[in-house]
Image (cartoon, rainbow over all chains, first blue to last red; front, side, top):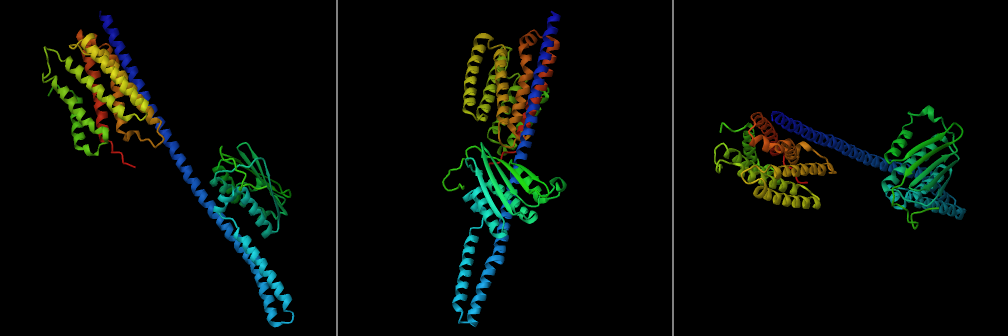
Length: 272
Length: 213
């Protein structure tokens, strides 16, 4: 009997300890899990706010670029044309005998200025990018570059077009815009070429120039523009690569994942 | 009152705190001070010999512990969000109540503590606690466990019933055969688990009210 008693008490003690340990394990697991869960939520929130900040910065940069383009266009093109028109009209005041030629020339210049102003009104802003889509926006930007910088440009689209989320499109557009303006500023190319390849849930954008090129390894870590492009690509889950060597031009390759369900309706937002 | 264990003072603290902060408590937590008041009455009734019926007080604990399980089931019924869990609580509690009645009236008897149905109730509450923890873990919002009164109530219940499960398996042998050492063991286990349970209830009563968003 005493052995039986001891055995029963032993079972009660050991069993209770085991069950209490199970309880401790459950509660510890709960604490660990919630700690991780909360950390994950915080990181997500932080990333979201980082993304929103970057988006705002991108919008501002696009706007800034737009203002720069407008002011350059007004100064270099429209302003010159209107000055010439004014000169022609002044000539008309002095020499009324050859008035027809001067008036005709002034009229032509004014109509060119009007046409340039009309083109300028199409200059991109963040809202138009969302409305007309990424590829059309890139195309317009290339046209503007061709006009203002005198560089021949082209865009090539392969595969069925799909649209990205509007915020992603804005950031991609800014990366392309920055690449183009970097090329113009530092590489003095004769040709600029953008190629968009659509694959299943993936868009690969190649931005190529035939300019001076550079040794990327040598400047790696110094160029803030390149770093910007890299960090922005990362923010939208895209992959950013560069191929360049002195004298052989530059190719920037941007591979962007496309969220399922954003297949483009081929009506008004597609080009090519 | 000298016969009262330490946990009874924790219950008193809970009652004072609960009624003092009643307006600051969340919906279901408001019921805790009333439940503690009932518990204190039950705990005091035995040493004051208020409930002895032909030298036996098991009938009283049979009734109280059944009410206790019904109260916990009610709390979890309200806490669970998915309808299937609410239904599960309702159905299981009904089965438990039916089984307890059968056990008390026909199997173990009214004059014996209903250890069999008590163990069934303990398993039931432990399962509710685990399911509530799962519900908390599935939340997509920021979780602050230490500020959640229901988490503290669940922790108290989990440890209380896990700790008591084996004890009540051997309860008949230990108590009715009056094994001296075992009775001392019972008091240690019982006091420790009760202190833990009612301390958790007190912490739950101290948790700040959830602000409406």
